[in-house]
Length: 243
Image (tube, rainbow, N blue to C red; front, top):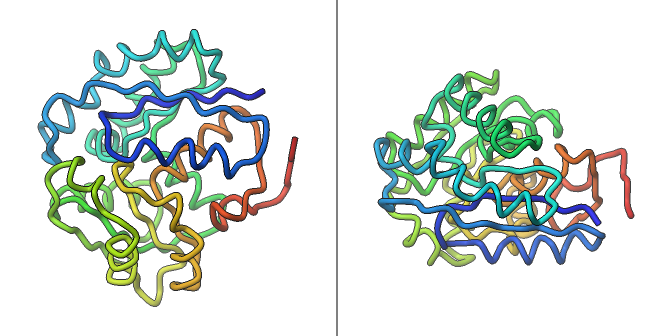
């Protein structure tokens, strides 16, 4: 059994994780600990506080006790808002606190794009434009070209969590650009696990979503690969190591 640990902010789309666990169809357990988000706001000051070292440290011991082999801060905006260097320091601190390999959803997008061999991406964000722009800046710092960014102006994760398939599909279609090699949907508060095959079929290209890449990143840190086509192109890469 491979146990993977996630620090998930609040309660919005955490039910993506048991769905993903089921779709992995292997001896993999996804353990979530919910962190205190403070103020639910896609605003820079609130996001900086949400991803503070103290808030993340509060959930670490429970994950250690669960036997987790890696830990991922399952929040995109609460990581990229710190900037490229600040986000690195955030995960270094988390790794030291947990005594485990650690990462965040923002870095998961970067490594997932590299895994797929894509260097040009479009971004469909639920965030206000200024926050969405910070994610684009983070990707550019990683050497990824951003062909377009579409923000949705949503302030709270709670509202994002109410979106269904129709809203997710519409966002993806509106955000995609012809020259993008992949589309990124960067919010772990957005339910996407059930919609990835539809999104990829509609757009004809890989789609990377926050909870999907977060789980993939935890697997990468634990040196596991699982072939799970229902989770999109990212989970069909060679070499396939299946339990």
